[in-house]
Image (cartoon, rainbow, N blue to C red; front, top):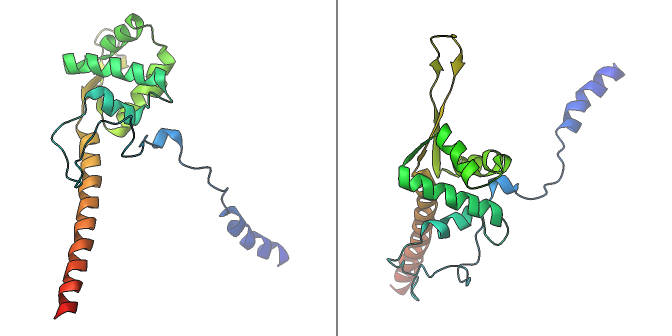
Length: 180
């Protein structure tokens, strides 16, 4: 009976977790202060968004901050420039890009490409092809641009604006009711 009690206690101890060491870098974004000199202005003095837009290099800086990840930033910028010009890249195109730009294959395929995919800047699709002569399967890669990154951040921003507007309208209603 004592052994059964020990077994029942074990799962409780297994539930204990190691204290967090923060957000893993693979799942984080660089968000400098909104008034940082590293950012071009995006709102006026009344917190209204301005019409100017950031270019691709400025946007990539949020995913691969040049200040902290210069190599990844330059690799991602060069790759996305190529993708912007062609709109669709095959595995052979990417292989040529890595060779011609003298970027480490490990850096590109293990760090840059997966991160761009994870944040939603690119879409990676694979097609299964069976070679007739050898009946061997292979899956060539095709990379295209994706709007998911923008949609994701727009959803976050729009949700925050709605929460702030809701709080301000509730406060205004309370003030109106208090006056009467």
